[in-house]
Image (cartoon, rainbow, N blue to C red; front, side, top):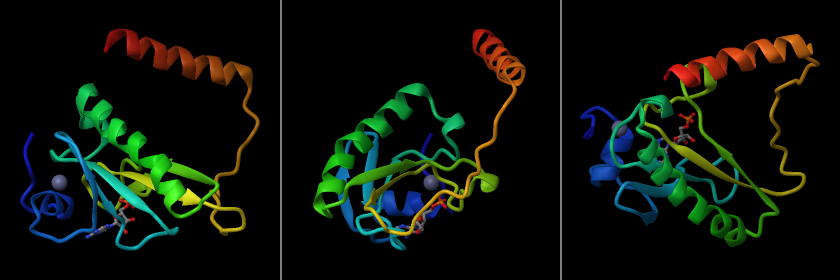
Amino acid sequence: MAGDRDCIFCKIVSGEIPSVRIAESKEACAFMDIAPIARGHILVIPRDHYETISDMPPDAVAALFRLAARIAPQAQHAVGAEGLNVLQNNGRVAGQVVGHVHVHLIPRRGGDGLHWPWPARQAASQELRQIADDVISRLTNS
Ligand code: AMP
Ligand code: ZN
């Protein structure tokens, strides 16, 4: 899996488009988000082009998150934040705009005004069991 000629993040990996780099590994690289939703917002991406996490081999996902996990505490401390969100969107419906896998590292502080507008609901235990069984059976057969 190599680069995609039309992908903005592949162009960042190759250096064709400039970025403010944070760190690199053999499989992944990290740079500052150009339009941060919080101070210190960083993106970590695989060097190879994959559109969603489902397209990636498990070892590539592991390598991506290894770099993200190494950077996360340093990103948080660098801006004096009290917490940090790790966010990874897959598919337009899930908020993915750039079609090259990326992990958002978003430092958080109290009163920063960011919140997830995801209302929770009570679910029947039967529904939870049914969905769990479906996922488990798919895992067994994959
Ligand atoms: P998503 O909505 O999960 O696809 O997030 C895409 C992210 O990429 C957004 O936070 C953008 O601000 C960021 N972004 C887009 N273009 C660039 C760029 N050239 N350099 C750095 N970050 C970028
Ligand atoms: Zn790409």
